[in-house]
Image (cartoon, rainbow, N blue to C red):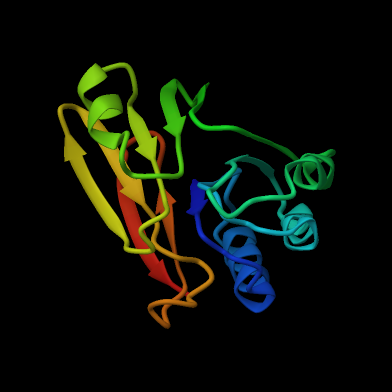
Length: 160
C-alpha cells in the first residue's frame, strides 16, 4: 500500500496523525506532494515505517534544510519527480497547472499533485490522477490523505 499526502503546512498534529495512520495501514511507501514547509515538520516523517519521496511546494522556502531533514528516510526534490515503483511509473508535482500536459503524455501510470487543498481522484487518458487534498487541514478544516494499491490502482480517500 502507498500512502499519499500533501499540503501539511507545519500542522504537526496532522502530520503525526498521518504518520500513525500510514504505519497502521502498513504502507510500504509514502509520497508527499509538497508544502511541508519547515524541516522540523519533515523530520516527523522519519517516524514512518517506510521510505518517503516528496517534491517541494510553492511554500517550501527552506529547501536545503528540508533536503537534510529527509536524509536517512527519504528524498525530496524539485518537481517533477519521476520514478518507478511496483512496476508503475509515477510522477509527483505540486501545482496543478501542469497536470493536463503530464496526463496527456501517456508516460505515467500515476500522477500525484497538491496545491489546491482539494481532494481529487480520477483516471484520465490511462493515467490515475490523485490529489490527496490537504493533510494540514488549515483551509477546509479536514485533514485528508489517500491510500493507493499499486497493483490495482484502487484508491481510498481518508479523513484523518
